[in-house]
Length: 229
Image (cartoon, rainbow, N blue to C red; front, top):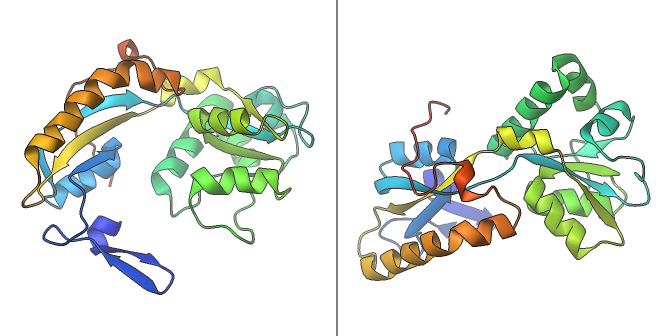
């Protein structure tokens, strides 16, 4: 959205994002839908190549307030409120809702969705921050988050948080790709050196961080075009 609008807003301040400006990325790391959007804007130079695949959603729960939640079925059967990505984070939210419908069925997924806490004081619409913030501050006893992020936060605060893995959600994970931008004056040698490093390191580094193993997806291949806006 910042690339589309030509800038990012921080309160009353606005940071311009222009191909001929001081701030503009040389590389973009995005999923298929977002990559297609920026490609249609003419911002991509060459094909986007897949370097990782996430394993779908997981649950991040309050260790004390939700001690009996050990699976997605437990979560669905409970009456606990929860938090997840906002409509401003449309890609992630769409993935979560589609996965819940696929794993629980439409009726139970709608019943679960009715328990969502949509807003709360201090929310900034960045799920990486909002979900652990809400769970650790007693706003909700549980949150839906990509499983690698849920595991990360539970590992950092094991006395407060617990990660509940949803193995069947891995089938609904999505690929992440990297592409060079059409920024004028980009240092091609530096950019290409980073890409060489990324594709050498990613097969070990990303699975260690909770992503899928490289033999589970088309590692290094061009990202197929997405029809989703």
